[in-house]
Length: 269
Image (cartoon, rainbow, N blue to C red; front, side, top):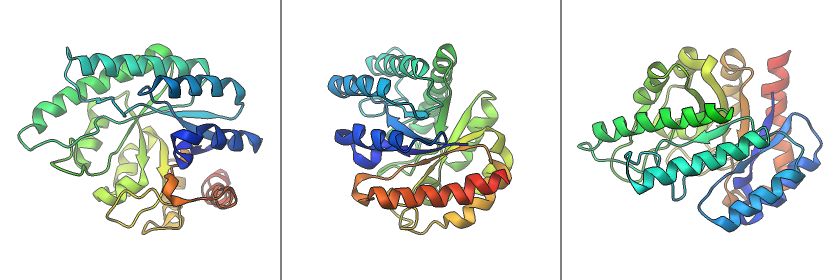
């Protein structure tokens, strides 16, 4: 199974640089997760110009800047969300992208709003899954960190419940987010491992969503490898570091080597 590097590591301005570095490694098991956002037409044009030059495996992170997936049907925000995901899914189909990461919201809700907002979000998740199916690309639904204010739209139990409610839903587990929300990873994987098709790997201090490199934080990725091999040995792994982590190409190559040895090679043999 493939390891991917998120282009988040270089930020929007240097997407091409990290994509070409990954592509230049010439490994059929190493790819790039491109941030496929529609918030800016110049950025969208850059993405479209970059893709024909790449031969490595690809995944996309779906749009959320300027796109709120919990927008009620019939609103301009809802139409914008649907249009954005149709554009991204069409591009993903053209370039045989392995998956598209989906955030079911970008905001917190008050306790009074939660029930109504959850109903809207569930309907919209089904809509986005349908769009993915129409274009023949996989949408993976991510567990999210706690919002800066108010209540999370779905708590850990409710996030797991989405798999029960939607038999066609597949997911990506963000390990950094799971640490912040207290998600019981082993219980989650024991119940739904066959439908967890990818991970976001990064580290944090247990308080903030830092997106640090693997050995910079409280998460023990060596210990996690056993759960991966037991429950999800075919899942894709995406290293999702933020630019502030200041990861050099040499350190990134070392993280890729460690992850491949711990997770991929060990799972295969």
